[in-house]
Amino acid sequence: MKLKKDKVGLFNYTLKNTAGEEIDSSSEQPMAYLHGYGNLIPGLEKEMLSKTVGNKFNTTIKAVDAYGEIAEHLIQKEVPLSMFQGVKNIEVGMRFEAQAEGGGVHSVIITEKNDDTVTVDGNHPLAGQELTFEIEITAVRNATKEEIEHKHAHGDGGHQH
Image (cartoon, rainbow, N blue to C red):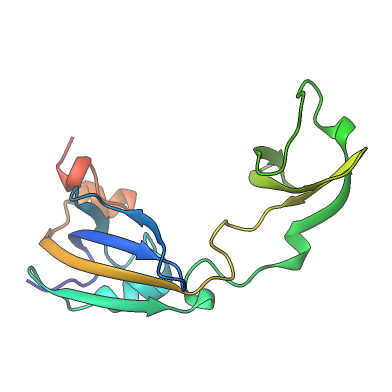
């Protein structure tokens, strides 16, 4: 069975940056995803199309097809420390949930700190990076009606709940 829309694929992966440093791994606990619903970064989902059980491959995904290029409008400089009420000792690297325009919540990270202000970056931590995946397809199955309705695979490793 080949991976295509409405199929659930399980795969092991190792993710590396351009320096060859490991960023993430499935640690031999296969990840399940429903193909065709944007549950993976676009470049990786495209590479998974038509793969079958046992396929092993490496692929490098450009930033634009991964987590996107760095969006400068998501970087805000000179944000007053007073905006972080109740938080003591704000440090570079801390991540916060910020209220976005329109009422949604957006994750930001502190990238610079001055005496009274900070710089926050709302880009995904892997934005602007080319990513290399080592993939092994461990299973492909038909999605359930419920998975298709919910637009994602269910359960640990794709088992139903």
